[in-house]
Image (cartoon, rainbow, N blue to C red):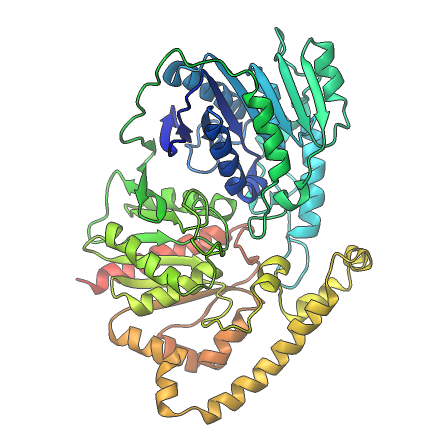
Length: 560
């Protein structure tokens, strides 16, 4: 089993691993949020396929992940990307046969591409209309503002799980029907469908001459839920590997060596993958660098991969490059493309991630220093690392939940249930669907009650503790650490969505008076009205980009 290497294929970014047989596999991921949620799982599936002797290629569609944006958001561009990936395996890997393994809408695209000697379709959508219905329903129950109300949507270009569906993509969906738009010619020799088959795809392929079978998809819901807590569907993956590896031909042609330094470029930017000890990242450099500008480093938020929630990090990196600013986005251990942590834990609110981040800085920090951008758990890591490392000249902390973490904090409750403010729950109880979820047992009312009760006690506890702390204790308080940062010439910018639950901790540590906050922090808290927790609503990312650009100018000017 070989390590995956990054490849660039006509603007597509992918991860390729040569195998010992004459059969290759293109893995076709889901779109948007489902692609982020299942990224780690599909990486695991690729490892298992490669161990069985198969060459594998995982790709990012145009406009997704790390790929360029040419033909982004068009189904023709996505199916064309699959065809280019198949061609790469045939021409560069020497695969005589190529199978497509697609998940969710990636399975739909695999079927629509007209490629593949065999197809493994995992929980496919038979049509684009079915996909849109399912995603819209998911968004209505999962996407929310800090107060619990639904995210405002533009029907012409809705946002689902942070990913915007373009008008062009919506216009393409009605024609994306596997049974109606199947390309002419020979059907794949073998087809495996895992999960439900409401549109009769198995019979459709059998009628076209394929040997097709339908089998269950055990563990599907736990796999697709979200990046945090996603469980590998071992039984389903074993079936996929058995199907794809059956009757594999011997390799007759040795693969060509991949490019030693693959890159993806666009207007004003050039991106290259970087492999570091315990980290995998993408360095985005401008074609016209801004003299004296520090490097901007993005940190994973939760278990979201390096491209960010809604691909925000990739998009912002390329916007920054257009202004002459370089950036680096990376995966911590246990996230995205980087190896697992030895303890098997999630890398969230864990002390040793500070050392891991500092090791990354050893490799990427330029003489001009670094500005760090982190959201939620990424903001926590950014704060603790800037306190430990003077190479970070400034940090932007977006919707920081808590400055400090202790053993009594319930990570599972926070990550899985996305606890919000008390007002959020009051708002939720006014919504009929929330009551239906409560009656079905989908909402754990006891856990919510513990959270709200604990939040109330925490406010009392913090006030009492403030009276009892000694001077030495105060030096270790958040305000004391921020004062130390300011004396060293480092800056913090705290940004919150209006109503975000993390504002309470900011007030507990820095006070409620705007004047007092400015005295301690050196600037006011920045509150973004109309932004959700992930800054995926209209205009939110543009505002955050402005904050980054302003801080780059401030940091650069301070160094003169």
